[in-house]
Amino acid sequence: MALFPFFKDDNKSSASVARERLKVIVAHERLQREQPEYFQAMQRDIMDVIKRYVDIDPEDVQIQLENEDNCSVLELNVTLPN
Amino acid sequence: MTLAQIIVVTSGKGGVGKTTTSAAVAMGLALQGKKTAVIDFDIGLRNLDIIMDCERRVVYDFVNVIQGEATLNQALIKDKRCENLFILAASQTKDKTALTEEGVEAVLAELAETFDYIVCDSPAGIELGAHMAMYFADIALVVTNPEVSSVRDSDRILGVLQSQSRRAKLGLDPIKEHLLITRYDPTRVGKGEMLSIEDVMDILGIPLIGVIPESESVLKASNSGQPVILDQKSDAGQAYADVIERFQGKDVAMRFTERKGFFQRVFG
Ligand SMILES: Nc1ncnc2c1ncn2[C@@H]1O[C@H](COP(=O)(O)OP(=O)(O)O)[C@@H](O)[C@H]1O
Ligand SMILES: [Mg+2]
Image 1 (cartoon, chains in turn blue, yellow):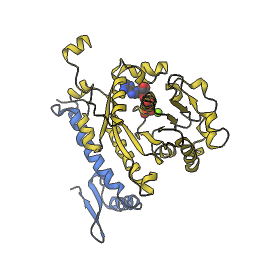
Image 2 (cartoon, rainbow over the protein chains, first blue to last red):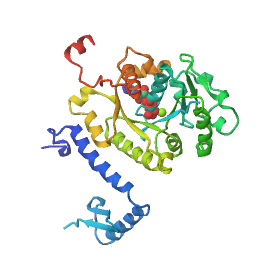
Image 3 (cartoon, chains in turn red, brown):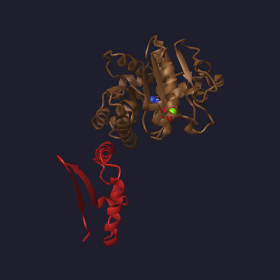
Image 4 (cartoon, rainbow over the protein chains, first blue to last red):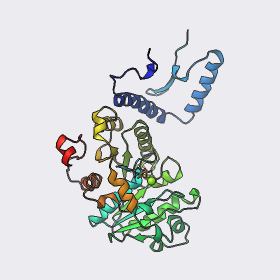
């Protein structure tokens, strides 16, 4: 029995795990930097509202602001648990 | 009149090698005949003076000059090994808010009249001290370890340089950014335990100016207060010397980036 199933995947080197994590983190933070100042507070408020109805992990909620030609579109993507 | 180039040595994360790099780069430029001042922006936690072996010669510091309690000439410490090198120590006690934008600007402007380079050793973080160290920069050395949190913090600092520096605010040409990878261990990279040079470059997307290997010589250098670039027998010392060459536009191949071969392991 594997005691530590998290560390099972040995054929993936730890450097390549680091690389994949970093790519995601950095891409996410760069996006955030381009957001208006109120965005983070708004994000938290939206999260709070959703949490009032369903028990959800922050990872399952994606809130994005996309800049179009002459307006911005707020994109909300929520993966609800079954 | 010379008008100094202002270099910030920055990283976001602490303990990655900024002070080691500031000392090495300042000494390296001075040895090339460039009149160089190196300033410790780490208010309250000064240690550049120790790395430079002048801690007993600090009478006045950066904050004393900003607050008009000493002239720049009184506070600048002349290096005993190289006549072109001067050190401005950080204040040990005063609170950080002593660093004001106007105060820092006045000191840099006065230095800029007679120096070729001003090297600003940034504290960790993105708070006031780090902000002041990068704000007036023309050139940034972004010191990064091949490690997730260090690369992440370097990317954040790049964001700060690109949006909050004086050059960004005034819409001037952007700060020239150079990536300096430090504490690199080719053996661990070979084993797949450490991010490679390519990984770090790929994520940060700025040009590489050098790779400093993880080296025992750095601790030895700091023990004795000799910037490691003075130890030209050491790998780290030579790697820093290469950085100075590249900085001056010379095309020098990267060294100490490959796993040691059999012969090197036996005889190296
Ligand atoms: N290339 C290197 N090899 C080994 N140790 C290093 C190297 N660069 C820095 N260090 C060590 O790492 C620690 C932090 O270095 P320092 O230059 O003070 O970092 P920072 O100014 O970014 O906090 C010190 O103990 C230093 O001796
Ligand atoms: Mg330091």
